[in-house]
Amino acid sequence: MIKTKEDLRYYLECDRISMNKKKSAKPWDITYWFLHCLRYYEYWHNQTTAFSRLPELFWHVRFKHISEKCGFTIPINRIGPGLCLPHYGTIVISGNACIGENCKIHAGVNIGASGGKPDAKRIGNNVYIGPGAKIIGGGHISDNVVIGANAVVTGNIEDSGITVGGIPAKKISDKDSSLHLIRATEVYAKDHNSRSN
Image 1 (cartoon, rainbow, N blue to C red):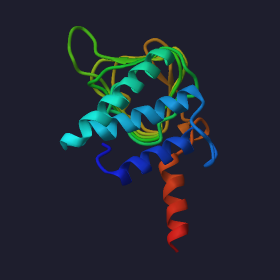
Image 2 (image 1 turned 90 degrees about the vertical axis):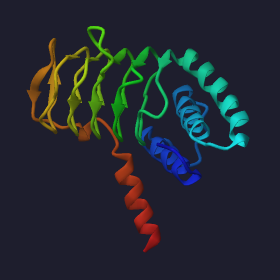
Image 3 (image 1 turned 120 degrees about the horizontal axis):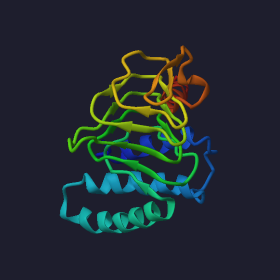
């Protein structure tokens, strides 16, 4: 959760790395701009001072506008740093879902509840979610998992570092997500440590 300006800078930098943007890049790309609005809105929403209400409203309006433009229904404070959204197009994520760091989510993805129950999946770190995938109901997905295009995940994925696909989704490979996404938090940590030394 983004509570301090240092947290905000960290999330923004990890998102930039995950999107493979240069440090000089301006957020003109629509999905990159969405990430900026998401993180700034999260930051101001999590402040507790009276002064924060006006900036929160400002970023709420911008976030709502860019969400509608992109076709995203993505709640705040539910996704860790290093989020990558390579394309605009419908993405729906339940407010009860929880997604770890370095997640790459393609268009057409739906992460939600099922059967009238509010529970949604807890998704680990370094998870790649292919176009059109549906992740339904409560439970969890382990780290370093690849969810193939149009897969339907209804149960838990206990094993880490595998690829799943099909309807319902099942293991189809022992390949992990390392070829499909950038582990931005690790890149940031290496860069930060090299500067400190």
